[in-house]
Structure formats: structure tokens, C-alpha cells
Image (cartoon, rainbow, N blue to C red; front, side, top):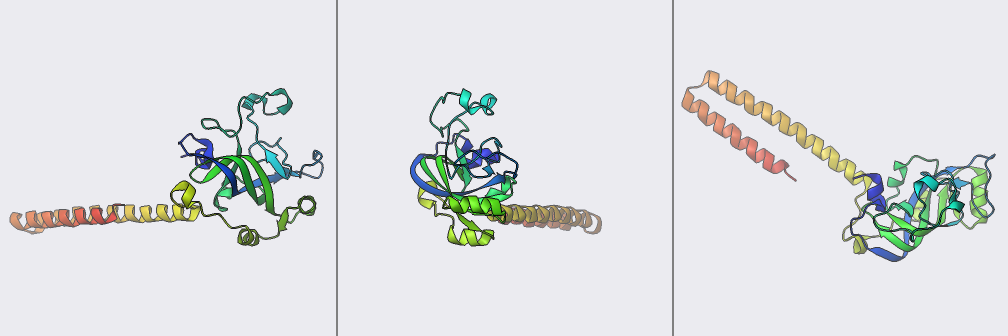
Amino acid sequence: MSDMVACGGGDEGRPFVAGTLRGYRTWHPLTRWSKVPDGSLPLAAVAQRDVVWPPTLTARCIPPRFAGDVGMVQTKHDAPRSGCTCGIYAWYDPVDAGIFNARVFGAVQASGLILMGDRGFRAERARITAIVTRNRRIAAACSDAGIAVYRHRRDLIREHPPEDLTSLLGHPPVTTEERELGRARQRRANRTLVFALCGRTAVIVAAALALPWPAAVLAAVIAEVVLIMLIMTLAP
């Protein structure tokens, strides 16, 4: 599964949700020499650097070839929409926000139409509610816009924790830590299976060389049974 699909970019039959939902994302800070439009913040989108965020951003579906000139495009449909990649992206888990590398981390409150993915969502609108930065220019602009500013990520997450999405997703979203633990368990299981196969082979060869054939056959059968039992215990 790609990161885009996980964050609501696919068409997996997830319901549109009308309401508000907290998520996490990152932004690129604009340099001091970059022009910031009136009413906007010195924060640019990660995927489309030409999109400069105001405190509240509303999504429009723009064909990729016109992405650099928003004024030329007529919206084909409301964003987000199933089967398209349009919409404002955010993650349920603050750890996942680091998938797209950028220097400013923050929380958003999404509203309007929201299309749920496995690990994130795409929204019609998103309001920045909090950011983590030590950049004085960004901090001042966000404070003036009523956005909470933190120096440490842990403080933001404590004040703006992830929401419980069990009722919407049918299960809690899988976190990055849980996925890493699952991969580590799978790697350990694979190593154990390799060692068991090598041990089984060694037992059979040793039995064939050192024991009469009835005893060697019995040893081979026992080795196979032990291997089968081990595979059953390692199965998910």
C-alpha cells in the first residue's frame, strides 16, 4: 500500500465523513525572502510548494498540469472525491506525519467532507490549530492567527492528542510503532524458521550416517513433526 492510498488517496469504499477531525501533517517553511500572500502564513505544502497555507485552507481539485497556475483551472468536482487524489492530506498518528520530510510539524482540524484512509484522511477544509517551531517569524505569524505554538512536539501532542477513530474505522488505526513491531516479529520468525530447517536437515543427515535405517527413519519423522509444530506456532 502506498502512502497516498493509506492517507485517503485510494478508492476503498471508505465513507465520506461530515464533521471535524484532528490530524497531523508537516509544512515547508518559506524563506524570509519568499513572498507570502496577504492572509497567509509562511508555510508551504509539502507536495505542492506553490501552495502557501492560510490559517484555514479549502481544497480544490486541480489537474496536475495546471498546478502551477491555479487561476487558469476550473474545478471539475468538489474535493475530496473517491477515485481522485484531491483534498487536503493529514495523518491520524503524529508519527506518520514524518513520512514526508519537512521542518514544521503541526495539528490540523479538518472539516466539511472527509474521506477516510487506513492511516490518514483527505479533507475539504483544514484549519491549522497548532505547530511546533522555533522560527520566530513563523511563530509570530501563527500566534497572530490564533494558532498555538510549541517548542517541543511532545507538548503539542499532549495538548492535541490523536482522536479515537474506532467508531469510524471499525478498528483503531495501526500506528507506525505497531507496524515496526510487526515487521520485527516477522523477521524473528523467519530467522527461527531458517534455523529450524537447517537443524532438521542436520538431524536427518546425522541419523542416516550414524543409525540403522529404522532408527534413521524414526529420527527423520520426529524432525519433520517438530518442524511442522514450529511452523504452526509461528503462523499469524
